[in-house]
Image (cartoon, rainbow over all chains, first blue to last red; front, side):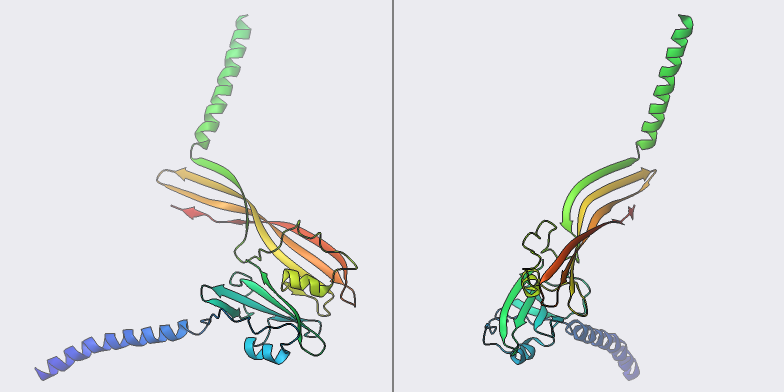
Length: 119
Length: 144
C-alpha cells in the first residue's frame, strides 16, 4: 500500500516538475531581448550641452558612426510605453521605428540631433 | 455558290472549335493583376524617388543628409559614399488554378529595388547623386 502510494506520487509529480521547469526556462529565454521602453529616453539630449560620455552611458555603443565618430546613429523602437534602443544586429529595418542621428562638435558636445521616422 | 457556302461553313466551324477549346482550357484558371503600392516588410519607408530635389551638389553637406534621412544602409570606409536602399511592390498578380478537387493559388509580387547613392568630397559636401532601380519578383503559392 505504501509502495503503491509512493509510485502514484512519483508518477504525478515528475511530469508536473518537468512542465514547471520548461515554463521557467521558456520565460528566461523570452526575457533576454525584452526592451525597456522609456517615454523620456531622449529628454536628456540638449544641443550645446550633452557630452559624448553621457550619450554612451545612456544609449551604449551606436549602431554606426561617421566622420571619425563625430556623427552617431542609434536605432530606436517605439511602443505605447515609449522609445527603446534597438541593437544593430538586425539586418533590415523591420523592427526599427526611428533613426536617431547625433552630430557632435570637435569637443564631443552635441551640436545637432534629429529623430528620423523610418516606418 | 455551293463551294463558297461550304468554305464559309468550314471556316466558321473551325473558329468555333478553336474558341471552345480555348474557353474549356481557361475555365480552371483565373489571372488577376492588382496594381498596388507599398514598401516590403523590411524596407525603410522614409524615402521616395521623387523626394531628392533638396539635394544640391556643392551645397548639401553629409551631416544635413543624415540629419534628414537617418542612418544610411551603406557607408564607404572613408565616408565618401552613402547609400540608402528601399523596396516597393507595384503589382500583384494573383493566379488561381483548379482541377478536380484540388487547386493552387497565390500572388506574385512585382517590385522595384531603389538605391540612392550619394558621393561627397573631402569637406563633406555633396558631389553627386544617383538613383539606381532594379526589378524583382517574389512568388508565393498555396495548394489546397
